[in-house]
Length: 329
Ligand SMILES: Nc1ncnc2c1ncn2[C@@H]1O[C@H](COP(=O)(O)OP(=O)(O)O)[C@@H](O)[C@H]1O
Ligand SMILES: [Mg+2]
Image (cartoon, rainbow, N blue to C red; front, side):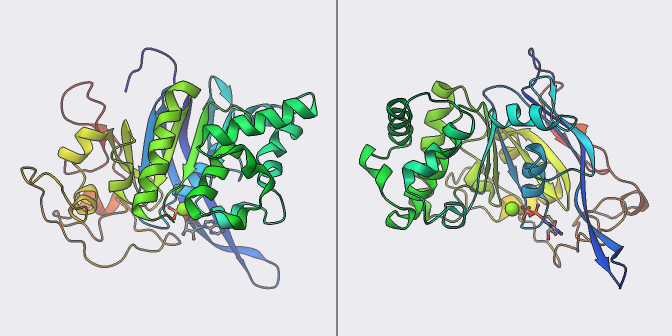
């Protein structure tokens, strides 16, 4: 995974366990292993898709990267600066460079604020504009950047469609001129045709605005076209990470194969294995030991699968950047 320049974002061994408290004393009686040792790098200008079923730890990973929640352990480094070790002031500076776009624009936009106030809030917080005129001009510019109009600034979120609200959320994130956007299921709640419009918008903005994306989705088909690389998560761990093409045409992890088997293929020449998974995703409160996937794995389950955590190891052509965490592949 060598890149000529230092990565923009580096996540190393990220762990987030949520304690479950019980009893009169509120002692920790159990824990949710939401993120269980996630590592990856993101180059400047790159889009990394992160996929996996609901509950596998995607949002928790995204929130830990921005320190919206505190990781249990592990490190996050942005442009050579420690995020996990940052104090309040450093974190504030980092917040201008890393932003998040949430799934639910209905819940994340304050219904009592005008669109202009929503988009402009960060300009005030970070003192990015000096005069009222500058402030207003910047809001107009941001709205136009995301395909909305200047006169939308005086309206309220409820007056907009789902796709437009997501554009407002994107404009708000762009206000501070960030370099990294974590898009957490940013299009998942939208109709398929609207999804494509928002994805195209994000893709069009990436180069001109110098953005990089961590693009979270539960569906492999959503991230395929926008991502340079894709990471597949299962129960708090990355089980496979590879350049998109390589992942979609030559998946190595049985879980990735199963996810892909559920994605319709437009090209009839491409043949995919039919893999059907048994049972449900186990609880992240008591994840299986060894390989988290072994209880549902269609491959032979060896003693090693049941006992040892498989590390990510390179597969395929040397330097291809295709990594898989499976003892049998
Ligand atoms: N604040 C929290 N307290 C306890 N458990 C949580 C909390 N947030 C998330 N979880 C649990 O952590 C796991 C991963 O959640 P999440 O990161 O939201 O997954 P995803 O985004 O992939 O659907 C889930 O089992 C979820 O229930
Ligand atoms: Mg989520």
